Image (tube, rainbow, N blue to C red):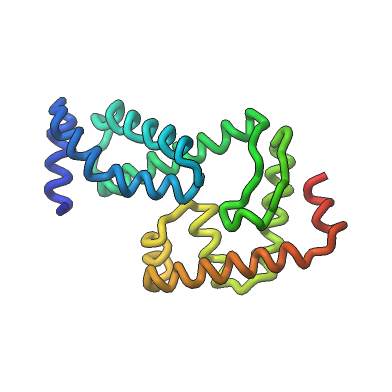
Length: 193
């Protein structure tokens, strides 16, 4: 759908037209759903987060000023909801760390209580991995997983095709896993004990 039509739907929704809200929901649902699922890898949790995203859209649409595209606005809400979800999981102490990079990268690290020091240690580990790998690989992983950009956004920021981003991401994940597995046991443990 063209940007002008989306803007028109947004204006109608801001005036309280429920049909316009329903059209916006239908327009963005699949994109938001797959984006969330690619980050949390759980149908139940994805449904929960997506519900929160659209509830925020409905409650806050009157605040949208059009300074960016509505799609960017929606993905901004989505990224914040994913971050909130992960932060709440950390606080609950029930989060089992399965890296967004690859479920085996930090396999079976159970987090009883994740605090700032733990997150700092995790950043150090990722920093060590990033420093050893090819800079281009590290940049793609940073854009995709730390900054939570879509494949399209990453491609645009790097000036490469989306397919190229996918290839680099796949290779970077394999390299990150190799680097992590090749750290000696003592060095790995110092980050998580």
